[in-house]
Image (tube, rainbow, N blue to C red; front, side, top):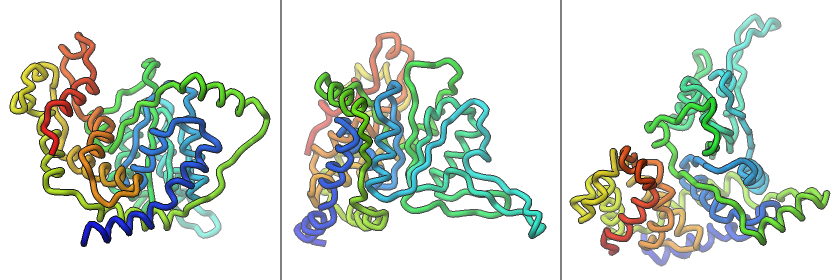
Length: 327
């Protein structure tokens, strides 16, 4: 398809983006980057992991987005005593019909917020993982497809490590984006305080529907991405595995494992969605740089030396972006 045709198509289909951001902005102050990343997840079908201290409106943001998109929202609070059945559902005996029937769990929603995912044991995390990967759930002998669109937003608290189970690397890899949610600015915080103490309750009105998101998704997958930019993505991901080959030998001691091929796939998809949100039908290197840290931050596993020298994966990824040649 011609780039100009795609460009026009993207213009039409992405028209709802501004009204959606404005509607979410009525309830949420600031946090534009977080809202945008969640939208990227929705437009590509990729799950999102949010990391931030309590009280930064993570839950409120997801709830507001689901209101504005007329989607079904469920919040699951992860606790050490949670069971897989508490998430996916279970079979119960119906006495009137003398048969076992499936009772669906809270996972059957469009937007599922897994709050403090690292508080639940591995068994529960793996039940959620199957739903994320297969987009279906097995209760008893019956397999049920999950609604479309289906997106898991998981949150983890970076400060309290008491009674938490660190997410295994394989599980972290299933999340398309990992977003660090920061504190608001002084001006934003003043606005938040005034709004939350005024006694006025503001809710987001619907501005788009799940069907609209499904249409937008099919357009996102058509966004044009040039050969050179595809090579650029692969070079960036390859540099996380073999920094020496890219003239970054000093980083080799700090990287234990580089990003998996999933990183290349997700970088490609996220960059397309990023371009779509900017009403563009083609991907530029700037799109790759904009989403690069969020896609790669949890996929680059550091060595003990890096931790000892307080070097973070973000520092390493930014260095890679500075060194790898831009097309």
